[in-house]
Image (cartoon, rainbow, N blue to C red; front, side, top):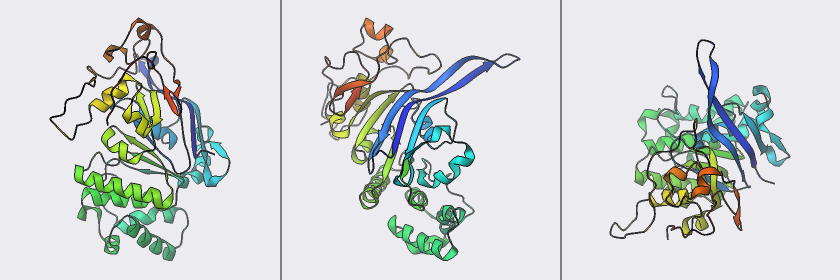
Length: 332
């Protein structure tokens, strides 16, 4: 059984105008997204800014209501429950099983609380005794490779990477079944990014974590994920095992994202296509394939008929009319 099954998830934001505030249009931030996360698996959700990936993560956490669709979550290894249909009161006992690692390690920690209290707060809310909280905090600090003395210090005394370790410890405090990591390294220096990624990989091996890793940097995603789901203007355009996607992408948008990854050798020249122009407006998406105004391989069919996500190979899905005939370039 999968830890998480998302089916046809939609989140639309109304645009209102006039004295009566009538709805005149909708921003289709997420428009029919489906994916799953298996036990112990990391799924990377990638795409440019504005594609809807953060909205997906917030819907899964029920930080915002969904327009339609199902979010089936298996808590405690039991049967799945549809989070999209639960009230705030019904969600409360399930929140301990889904925790989040935030993007900004500075604003996500309370500057007026000591690190030990920050990590212990979810334990306190869930009725864990003071003695057990202290032991658990020390255990978690050791788990994220922080010294025991950090417990009595305030967040301002630490670097960005150390603060993110505190955020990871807080997320792990209640032994959740699913971690949602919303661009957890994008605000960090490159050298620190590597340390945090290595820490997440180590924790995944030791704890068997299931994770939704939201990111826009595909050079980071390659090292941490088992599968990659690529989003564009609120919809999935490709889902594939990580190695297969990097070796041979099937969608031109995926190729464009890979082309934006800096090459280790600046003298090496490739033939990958870099997408021109801006991300389409989710309030007024183009007809047909939303990527066709930026796609160098677009034909007339792409302009009038929207492709649906379909199986293309073993474990791979793509929404492109020409996927089988294109020879797209990946990253070796």
